[in-house]
Image 1 (cartoon, rainbow, N blue to C red):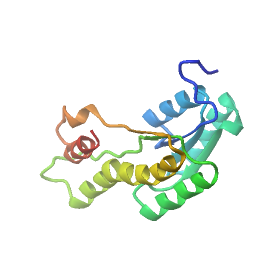
Image 2 (tube, helix red, strand yellow; image 1 turned 45 degrees about the vertical axis):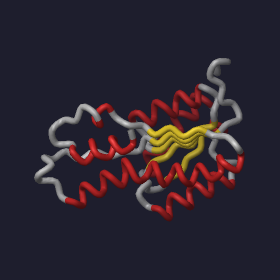
Image 3 (cartoon, rainbow, N blue to C red; image 1 turned 90 degrees about the horizontal axis):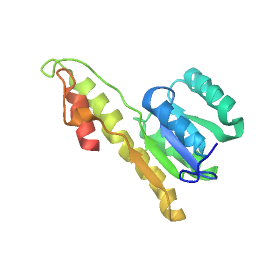
Length: 168
């Protein structure tokens, strides 16, 4: 059911990291607002369970999936190209993210790089690819989800704080 204040009928929304958490909730809201939702995740089984659940509520024709690692540049380019070939993305919501909890003085550089690649670089890369189609169509919206942790950091999440601060 859609509301005249929030009607996305005829638009396609891609929500990264939408198999659970914030991404799942936002994907549900966009679908309820009339959008065709493209759910995203890295785990094909979790993605299918999420698709089936949302499709049961809004209809199978309004829920699609894409499975790729947001930190794999080639996979991002290929996935967005496939979505563009299928009609494009009108709304992108970047919620995919990872956390690594460890004291900053102990955290390995590989863990820092993984958190930064997922939480900071990936939204830029995905946004860049989606924006190309949006520019051609002359419209679109990109939302990058940050975190209050960029301002109110807790002990043990230094890389996450840095990444989300960059998004902010």
